[in-house]
Each structure stands twice: as C-alpha cells, then as structure tokens.
Length: 272
Ligand code: MLT
Image 1 (spheres, protein in one colour):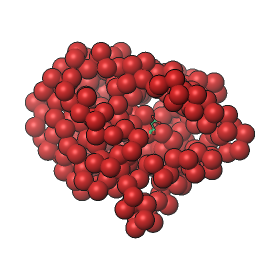
Image 2 (image 1 turned 180 degrees about the horizontal axis):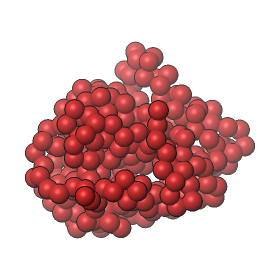
Image 3 (image 1 turned 30 degrees about the vertical axis):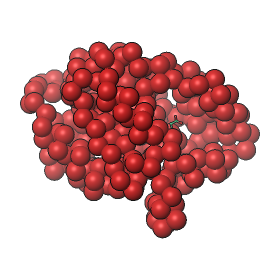
Image 4 (image 1 turned 45 degrees about the vertical axis):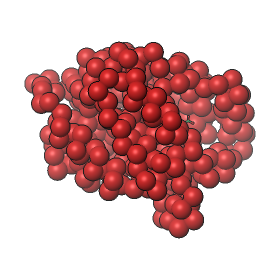
C-alpha cells in the first residue's frame, strides 16, 4: 500500500521501504514510482528508499497546464520536509534526473549525493519543444496510446524489445496508466526546462552517473558530458540496456548503486 502526503495543495503518493540513510529516487516520464521496484528490493536491507509519484503521474494529483521541473522539485522538498528528512541521497531517471538537477540548484544543502540515470543536463532544442507540444495535444485529444506508440520503440534496447515481453508489458502499462492531463503538463514542463549544464561545475555532492549503453533518448555522450563537468563524478555504462536501464538490467544497475552508496562518507541525514 502506498502512502500519501498532503503538501502544497496536492496529494503525493509514495512508497517508503527499508531503514537506514534515506535515498529518494524519482521516476522518468511518463512512468510512476513502480519503476523502482527492483531497487526497493535491493536497497531496503541497508537504506530507506522513498519513491514518490511525481505530480501528474501515478496516484499523485494531476494539475493541468505546465508542470515545471522546479514545481516537481519543490513537491519533493515538501515531501521530505513532511517526512522530517533534512538531507538525502537524491536520484532520478531521465525526467527524474531533470528534477534532481533542479532540486540540487534550489536546495544543494539537502542533497547528500546525486544519482543521475539515463538523463541529461541540456535543455530541449526548438525542434524537440515543438514535438513535445504536438505530443501534449495528441495525448489530450487521443489518450496515452499515441505516446506509447511513439515512445516504446525508443525506450528499450532492441534486444529488450524483441525478447523481454515482461519488461515491454510493464513499461507499456506504466505509460498507458498515466493520465493524459498529467503527461501533457509534464511534456510542457520538460519543453520549458532550463539548460542545467552550467550547474554541473558547481555540484560538489558525490555523483554517480548511470546510462544504458543503448540508450537512444539520452545517449552515452550526454552522460559523458555530465561526467566531464561534475568534479569527482563516476560513471557506469550498463551493457545491453536502453533508456530504462534500471529495469532492463536491474542487477548491474543495483550493483553500481550499492557500491556508490557504500562508498559515501557518513553524515547526519535526518532531523531528530
Ligand atoms: C523520460 O524518460 O523521462 C523522458 O523520455 C525524458 C524526455 O523525454 O526528455
């Protein structure tokens, strides 16, 4: 059963499993907190894993219009405040990574370490912005099946698509389970997002960058850009995985995550 926090005039649904230093993981678009199922199973023995549904996704309130990365970051900050967590390891996949970077810009002192998975620091190109607006309108008009048809072939590595029907079904169901209004608002928010490349040089939290070797949406070169600019960051390329590397190759992903978390300097993480 998921938990619900009432903050900032909305209800945020989240899972909260395990005990230990808090780790918050933010899902990509247009997914939900169940993206992190395998990470919950692996991390809960040593950490407290908090996985919210971002605004407009899963069981969290949908708000129309444009939902910016900063709005989602403020939602996460309010959730952490509600849970009396002062500092946490913060990770995100793809859109979740855009939100994690926005969170770091707003609240650097609250980030103990960063995990940036299958994401990028750059803003959208003009062409990508136009495509997002078209997709937002289509989703509102025709429903999520148009988004699913456009995204699915790009989300997963070719071998995952051909041979792993369980993963294909799971990803498809997450997409089709997202409400068109929530997806449209997030698409418009991603189109508006700022370029965060300048921020990278200011990041002094330990940072792990993870990317699927076959990620067609945020390719390895985007991860390399972040690695080059974030001082002391380390990078893990996951073979045989596409854009959803944490569920395509969960064992490799979890190994990288666990090794990174084990190596973090210990520190005070929560309010009393
Ligand atoms: C995601 O997985 O969150 C999206 O593909 C990100 C994007 O469209 O830029």
